[in-house]
Amino acid sequence: MTSLAALLKKNLSFILILAVLTGLITGVVTSRLPRTMDVSISFTIPIPERPLSNNYEYDGYYALQATDLFASTFAGWLHSPEFVSAVYEKAGILKKPSIRALGKAFTTRKVSGQLVELQFSASSSKEAENISNQVVIAAKEKVSKFNSEGQKNLTFSVISADPLVIPASRNASINALVAFVIVLVLGINVLIFVDAYKRT
Image 1: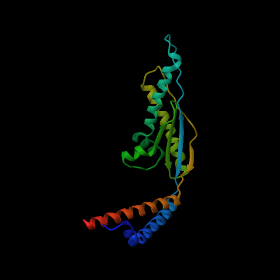
Image 2 (image 1 turned 135 degrees about the vertical axis):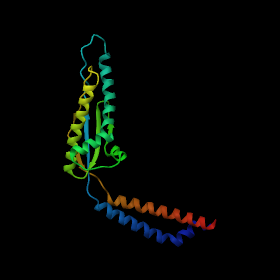
Image 3 (image 1 turned 90 degrees about the vertical axis):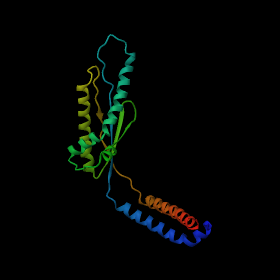
Image 4 (image 1 turned 135 degrees about the horizontal axis):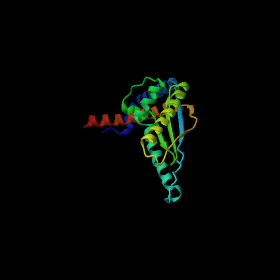
């Protein structure tokens, strides 16, 4: 088997040229990609008022627990393919990706027992505003339907904050550097593998 030093001496210049070209192309392509917007919407779930009862309810512990469980359910609704598809349809955005893609379009996170955060990307500020409005409307409709079909002892509600819309960060130089390193490491490994295969 040829030593690594001998292999690099013979082929390193070609690998370096390939890595540099890949990095440059990656940087140029990244800088010319359409600018997208990152959007974040926070939903607060107030603790529902408890109906009058003669039973001791541990200072509202049951209502707190019910709110926490509802927050988990609410977060699940927001990134479900059915919900995302309905939002896109009402926003007038013609997107027909797979169910898998729809499930990844919105990202949700339950920050606490009463706070749920939703994030997504849009192609423009106008589209971000349009989708945000439809998300809030659809979310409140979902909660209203849940209350009407569920038990009447607790009624949940959600309060949406104003959406935060900022341009998506895209660093062309970092992407170019990452591409350079990947091609360099991959090229050296391919070189070693090919040499070993020839020897065997």
